[in-house]
Amino acid sequence: MKAQVFRGVNQLSYEEIPVPTLEPDEVLVQVRVVGLCQSDIKKIRYPLYEPPRIFGHETAGTIAAVGSQVQGWQVGQRVAVMHHIPCMRCAYCLNDNFSMCDVYKNISTTAGFNASGGGFADYVKVPGHIVQNGGLIPIPDNISFEEASFVEPTNCCLKAVKKAQIAPGQTVLVTGAGPIGLMFIMLVKYFGAKAIATDLLPSRIEKALNVGAQAAFDARDPDLPAKIHALTGGLGVDVTLLAVPSEKAFFQALDCTRKGGKILFFAEFPDELEIPINPNILYRREIDLMGSYSSSYRLQNLSADIVFNQRIDVKALISDRYPLKDLSAAVEAAIAPTAETYKILIYP
Image 1 (cartoon, helix red, strand yellow):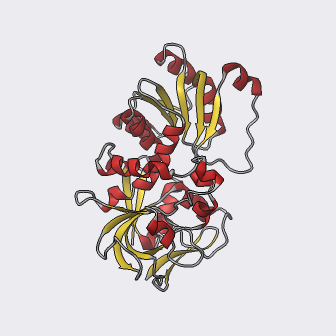
Image 2 (tube, one colour):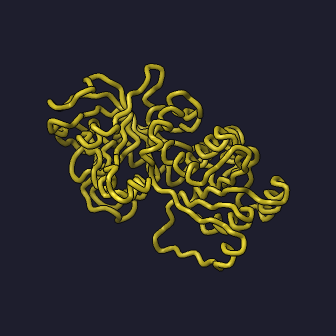
Image 3 (cartoon, helix red, strand yellow):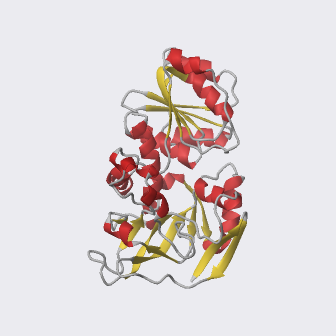
C-alpha cells in the first residue's frame, strides 16, 4: 500500500509499504478520507517524535478485514476511527482526565512503524483495545466519509466548551477563525451562547459571521476591548477560547474577559514561550485559566450525535482536498493559508 512516511523534520516520503497484518483482536480499515490537523503539522515540522512514523488521525473509512476474535464488526462497514481510547481504570481516568492516561497516550491506530495515528496511508490497523472499547463508530448511511472525519476534532472542541462550562446566554470570545475557531463558533451557538470572533484575515472575519458569530473583528484593532465591552453591557465576555498560539491574543483575552470569567488555552504554544503575568490580575478579578488538550472519551457519543445529525455544518469548514501523494503540498497550504483556506482533507 501507499503511505506518507515521516522520515525526519519536514521530510515526508510517499512510499510503498506492507499492509499491516492483524492480530486476532484487531481490525483493518481502508482509509477513505483523513483530516489534516494542526497537531499533524507540528509533528511533521518540529523534532517532537523519532522517525519513521505515519501520522494522521481524523480518519474515516471502510472495514477491510477483521481478526478471528473480533465480534460485532464486518467487512464493508463504514466507520469513523478514534485513534486513542483510555484505560478507564487509572487515577487520571477516574478523574475524567482521559487524555492524561498512559494507555490513551501510548496505544494508537497505526499503518506501520511506531503507532502514531496512521491515517496518512491506504490502510490503518485498529488495535484490540480500541476495537473493544468504542473506538470504531458506525457511520450512518446518509453521512459522507468527509463529514464523519470531523467526529474526532468535534470531540476535541466539545471538550473545551464543556470544560469552560459555556452555558446558554453567555458571550464567548473566540480568538482565531481558522477551522478550529469556526467549529468553536458553531458549537458555542449550538449550546445557546453568543460568539465573538477575531482574526487577521478579512475573509475569515466574514466566514466567522457566516457560520454564526454575533460579531467578528480584526485582531489588530486597538479598540477591540472597548468594542467587546460595548457588546457585553460593559462587563466583557464570560469565556475566551484561545484558538491561536498568540501571546497578544492572551493579553487581549485578559482585557476582554469579565471579572469572574474564564480563559481557556486550546492552541498549543511553542515550548520556549513564557508569558509574564501579574498574579494579582487573576486574584483580584477571579479569572480562571485552564487548558484543554485532545478529546474526551465521555463526549464521544455526543460528538458523533452532533456530526451525524448535522447539528453543526461541518461541510462549511472544508476548503481543500488533496490526494495522499500531495500531503507535503497540503501541509504547506495549511502553514501559509490563502484567504479561502480552512479545513484540508486528504484522500488516499
